[in-house]
Length: 197
Image (cartoon, rainbow, N blue to C red):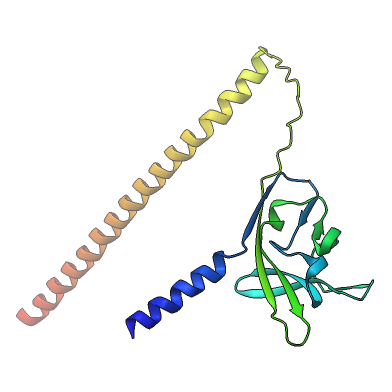
């Protein structure tokens, strides 16, 4: 059983590697993805469809039949058309266009369908930063310095107010506790005096 599973895995790896082509392109360039190792002049086929594979789902891009001059566009998020020899032409590519594409060739009756993978990597778009001039003006007037000192002293002032508020609250709680203990002891004295009388 293990040997059978290993054999199937090897076949799948061979199938996925076979015919895989990688494209590496700079941002904002036009790219034409071609079906790898296919001679369309000598191939008996019905149609060619391009897909983008995302999250294990196929998203149709464009389809064209061998005898048709028109193309069928799918609801793809990007403008893409057929180029020469059924290649997928994508203008002004961005990093979002990176991913796995599939060239699906539907065969005529008696032929074999082909599903060929193409990987596209689009490098990040690099923009030149605009050169800006920074002018620093030093203002040494006393009013500006006073404002800066007041802004720096404000957190210290709030800290002091907070400590004073906490201290006063503790003192108030202590006084209330002493008063409550005094009231309790005076009640106990009255009760004991009434018991003695």
